[in-house]
Structure formats: C-alpha cells, structure tokens
Amino acid sequence: MPRQILVTGATGTVGRHVTRQLVEAGAGVRALSREPADLPPAVEGVRGDLTVPGSLSAAVEGVEAVFLVWPFASAEGLEPVLAMIAEHARRVVYLSSAAVRDHERQAERLVAGSGLQWTVLRPHAFAANALRWAGQIRTGDVVREPYGRAAMSPVHERDIAAVAVRALTGDGHDGAVHELTGPQSLTQAEQARVIGEAIGRPVRWEEISPQDARRSMLARGWPAEAVDGVLRAQAEMTGGPAPVTATVERVTGSAARTFRSWAAEHAHAFRATMRAARIHRPCRCGSCGSWSAGAASAWPSSAGPR
Image (cartoon, rainbow, N blue to C red; front, side):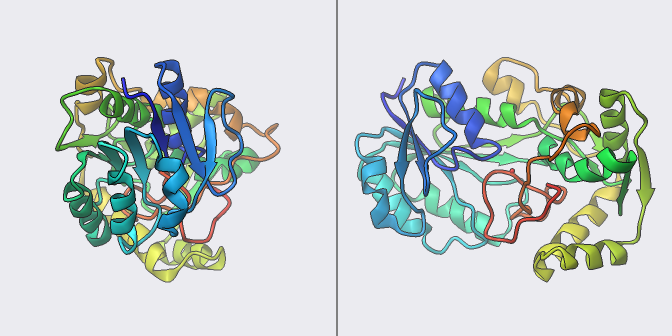
C-alpha cells in the first residue's frame, strides 16, 4: 500500500469516490484543489493548479502514486505536470475515456512515456450522465432529447473509482489500459424508463430533432464543437447494442453495478421534492453519451448534467 497518494479532481464525480475508497483502504490521501473543500476529515487538502506545474510542488512532495485527471480539451501543458510528478512519485493512474480522441491519445502517450509506472482507465458512458435529465423529470416526468435509440453501457462512477484504487495500491496494472463499462447495454430511452421505475412514476421519452437539441445546447452556452461532437456520437450509437466489458469484475472481484442500482441510489435527484440537482459539466470527450464526468471541464457548465 503506497504511504501517500495524490488525487486530482478529488471532488469530482469519480475523484470523490477514489478519495473515499482510498481512505477506507487505509491509504494516506492528499487531495489537489484550487480551493480545498468538501473533503473527508482524513484527507489532506492541498492547493494547486494543473495549469501551473510549479504550484504542484507541495502536492507531490512525498507522494508515491497519483490519480490524474486532465480536464482540458488539449494535452498541452501535461508534459511538465508529469515531469513534476515523476520527480516524486513512481506510479500514475490516468483517467482517459473510451473516446480516445486525438488529445486524449496524445495524453496517453505522454503518460506512457513519463518514466512512471502507469495505468490508463478508459470508461465508457458514465451512469451519472443521466443526471442531465433531472430537471425535466422532476417537473414533467418526461425527457425531451434526440436519439432515444442511442445505446450505451453506463458505468457506475464507484466502479470506475474501485478500479482506480486497485491500480493505485496494487500490483499487476503497470502498462494496463482498462476499458470500463457497466454490465448491460441500454438505450437512452430505456435508461429513462429505469429511472421512472426507481422513482415510482413512469418517465416518458419524447424524441426531438437533433437540430432542436443543437439550438437548445448552444443557447445554454455549449461550444459549437462540443455540441456537434455530442450529437454525432449519439447518432453513431443508434446502430445496435453497446459493447460490454468484464474489466470491473476482473480487476475488483465484484460484478459491475447495474444502471438500475445507480438509479435507485440517485432517485432523490429525479423526484419533484428535490429543490436542486447537482450541476455537472459538459463532457470533454463528446462520445460518452453527452456528459462527463471525470472532472471539471474547461467548457461552460450547463444545468442538467463526470
């Protein structure tokens, strides 16, 4: 067990579970944040900014492993960050995505060439992406979106974290690329139905045109490139079932959590009595279904939904 592990994105959708599970495993945890807050008492919060490598000096001092989230749409600036990490740590676990767009592939190459022991996580669609529908469901029990037939295999953020923790604390993951999915392929319309079952009210899917969806997303402040990437990816997902991997079970020894279990855990976010759902940020990959969540994105936030 490494004596000290640094978690970047420690309050994000995945990072907060990585932090909690590391604490439960008995690891010393240091969390990097511009403004450390909302951290468990056992976690040491340190200030730092990934865009300013020099600010990471205190964060990486004495650290043996790093959970790395790179929340930008470019790999520019990552190399000096990895160099700073390599001065102190021996292992890095990088949260990529199954999209593996150009900048993500470049980031993976930099991680692999850093001289560190490395592991790459490539999650498919986050189950948490469904939180983007919370406002619509709370007010009308309906989801108005395009591409209801788009199929994905939503992965629970706690399962992504569990794999990360195994790679951070155990052996046998050096040079591994772990592709992570949930246990079942579901269309977006089917996900909405499952959420309805979790909250005890039918949730209806209402198909709208991609053009109408694009106008709405642009009006909410999404960059045009992001909007087009999301809609293009969803269109590509309408051709049939999504791939399902057994990686979560193979690495952790426990079966991947179902979307139904995720919906039951998060039912409060979709019920009308909920005053406000957590705001998530647009996905940086554009191919995981539309939202993210590995970490804060450089793109504008949108109420909806690491």
